[in-house]
Image (cartoon, rainbow, N blue to C red; front, side, top):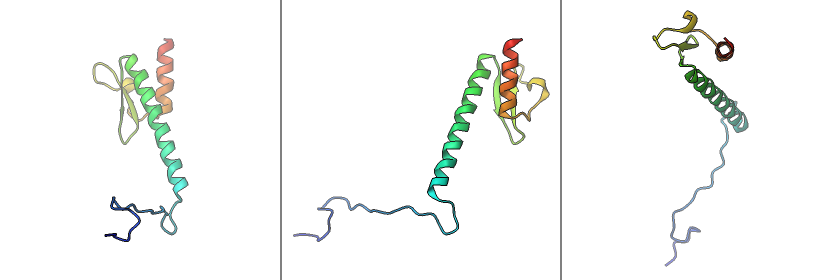
Length: 96
């Protein structure tokens, strides 16, 4: 007995095409945003690794980034640094 479907007794597969809602961003824009987020995350991980090699911890809050030393205090009493500022600080610290 045949069921009349094209799935031949297996699991039926749906073929849907993803479309964005009217007025929404296209799927290419969403992918681009995901790529930018991934690049930012990889960059943050690199800076975090660099900080660890210098005995520091990188933390993030609503204010920005902070480097925490071994006494659990922010370096230069700052907790509002950008990732660029943290990189510059770590580069300058390595030349001292």
